[in-house]
Image 1 (cartoon, rainbow, N blue to C red):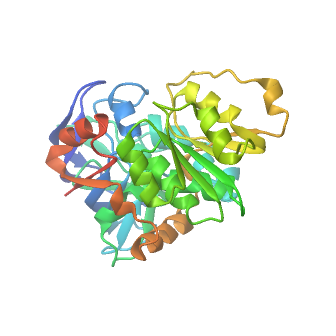
Image 2 (cartoon, rainbow, N blue to C red; image 1 turned 30 degrees about the vertical axis):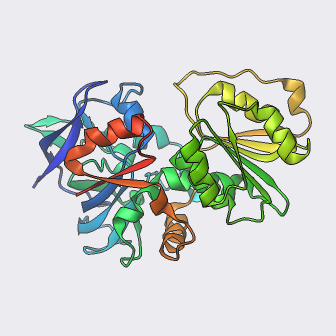
Length: 368
């Protein structure tokens, strides 16, 4: 039997989110119905809503959900009705990368999460007036009062932590934190540079502040965000609208360059500057995603000093261990995620979109 709910539907590329009555399919063996309490709004949602990716529209997006389990399929073992959960990406669980602890690099990641709009078997999870809609976004499509969620998207969390305060962990925060902890792994005396002080970049700053890195440099063009970066752990800030990045980093590092750079802007010119600013054997992590097919020119000889450029998806995190650890840090005040969050009632999703686009909100979180 289908489950009625209300969702924010994107009718076509570039159209606004509109609230609509929809129906969820009955949960399959490895699915759960989750009553949403909060869900973050991410630039990936906006990119898909604009028509920039081949996700089937009309459809329901949302991939930073948090809520309470209402029902589970017969094969679900990790959660039960009443459990509090954070929703993240899904994966097959059987390919080499999934079995090796790297589900963000699942062999079927793109169709399961970003562009397929359906379950792996091709069936739809959400419909309206008898017509299938694009759904199963990151295994959840959480821009809805209830979501039909893939079991591998579910992460059981501490019920004492307010779900509104941890919804962004499922994508943006774990991406920024994972860039630092899982890839850069700073050692004593390291210099970490974060290009872009949005939600992902500021998450990286907070993560770096929990490592032995000596210099933590935040780079942006918005003074207010640079000030917040200082409060969250940055030891230095660079206003890219006023200073040359290479010269500024040379001054901060005594000419040595950066040991690690996290590039979150998706601007290939900024990426090139970050690579050029690396120290010998330094690593740049590419997080920001420009349109598909975008290329960047690099000085090949400049890479021969052992520099590395590494692409990253979702922090290369194993969600079942990574997200509960982040929840504990939020609970203990060591990851002050609340400093990034602005809350909006679900019905005001379009206002949240506008505020995010205008830079007024770093991480909008919709509440139900």
